[in-house]
Length: 67
Image 1 (spheres, rainbow, N blue to C red):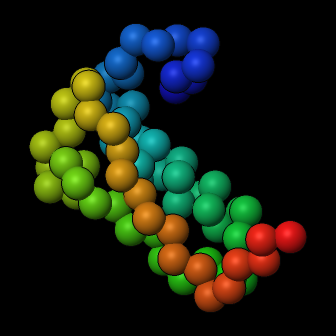
Image 2 (image 1 turned 90 degrees about the vertical axis):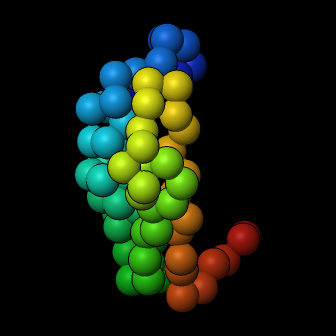
């Protein structure tokens, strides 16, 4: 899924894979011990994803160093 180079909406299956697999794994790798939770909300969490849906994700951290 590459929204910059391919602006066509991805299939719902790709959105689900991103929301449930790719995003949490990327958050774990990026934030390591500071990651508390990855929260999926909106249409994806409600089981109402469509090809034009966005994926709403909130990342909860213990701490964040903006530097």
